[in-house]
Image (cartoon, rainbow, N blue to C red):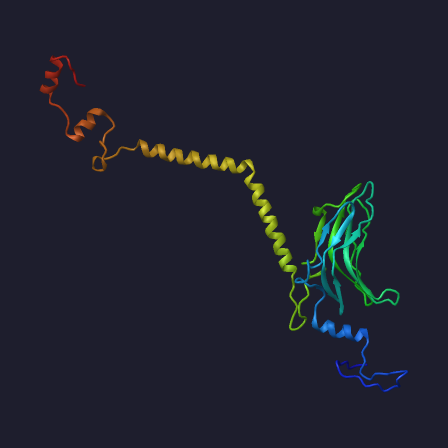
Length: 267
C-alpha cells in the first residue's frame, strides 16, 4: 500500500462472527505514524529518564522513565534491576545497557537489557544493532574491571545525552534537536575545569607568584632610593649638610665656632 492514513472509523465489511474492518491498521502502520511525530530516544521529563545507576554487587538499576524507539513506545514504571555478567579474571570489559526494539514474532517488545562486551587488553564497547526488525539505543556503558565483584557508579558512563547513541525524544517536525553538541560541550567544560585545578596545584604557579613578589620588591626599593624634592616634603639631598642647606638650616662659621668653644661641636 503506497498511501497510509488514520484514524478513521472502521466499518465492519465482514460478519459478526468474522468481522473485517475496512479502516483497521496494523502495529507496523501505527509505528510508521509515530516515527513522523517523534525522534528516537528517552523522554527527559518522565521519571528519572531511564538513568542507570550502580546498585549492589554486580547489579545496576534502570530508573523509571519512558522512551520512543522506531515508532514503538516504552515505559518503565519502577526501578528495574539488571545483573552484569561476572568479570573476567585477567582482562577488562565494557558492557552496554540498551533499549532493544524487536519485532520478531517470538519477541515483539522493547526491553532494557545488557549487551556484554568482550574482555580484552584494550576492550571496546559492543556496537549498537540497528536493523529493520531489531533496533537499539544506548542508555549507559559499564566498565567492568578484571576481577571486579561489584560495579561502582564511577564505572557507569551515561550515554542518554549522546544523540548518536540515544538522545532525548523531541518532535520530529519541524526538526530534531541534536544533543551531541551539548554532550561534547559538557565534556569540554569538565576537562577545562580539571586542567585548571591541576595547574593550581602545580609548583609552577607558586614559582610565578614568587617572581612577581620579587619584581614588586625591587621596584619598591628603587622608589625608596630616589631623592625626594623639598617641594614634595623631602630634603632634596643625600647628606645631612646638603639637607640643611636646602632647608635653610645651615649655620655660619662663627655660630659653629661658638658651639665648639662651649664643647658642642657641630659637623
